[in-house]
Image 1 (spheres, protein in one colour):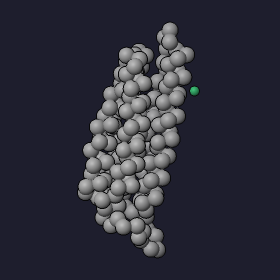
Image 2: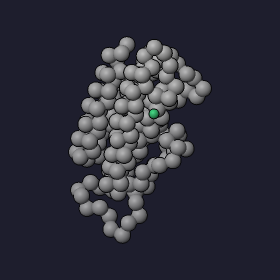
Image 3: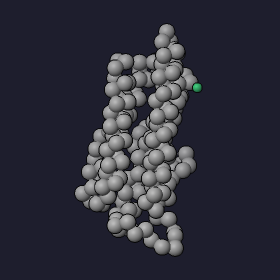
Image 4: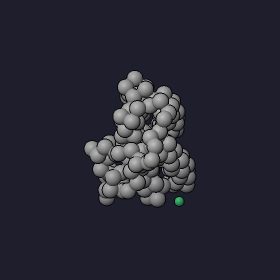
Amino acid sequence: MTLRTLEKTKGDLNIGISQQNREGVVKILNTLLADEYILYTKTRNYHWNVIGSHFNDRHKFFQEQYEKLDELIDEIAERTRTLGGMSIATLTEFVKESRLKESPGEYPGDLKMISKLLSDHEQIIRCLRSDLEICDTKYHDIGTNDFLTGLMEIHEKMAWMLRAHL
Ligand SMILES: [Fe+2]
């Protein structure tokens, strides 16, 4: 795991979180960003490749979901920058750092697509529940704790919408 270094600027941030703690938070945010990018790509793949009698509904539903993930991706990367960290921003790094797995060449049926997305959302929710705790108790960054709590709630709602199809 590559530890992202903090931005090389003239003065350090003076916001009440030590540089060491900000490095820990940036690492959490970059790993999460990689997870979100993999899930975004998977959702977009299914938007393109879904088939079946519910094509129109599923096609639109997956689009709503990947558009939401796209918003989250931007917010996570910009939170990293807010804390003086550098955001990972290449596909190579996203694949390397992500905790989620891709399945190249596989085109599941529409319900299987939904269950695979649900499983990834649930994995992210479990990771977030642990990461947000660490941001508070270990790194004393209550702002990122709050940010990740909000993200977790969004994933919980997206997971509900996926689960409701099954
Ligand atoms: Fe499209």
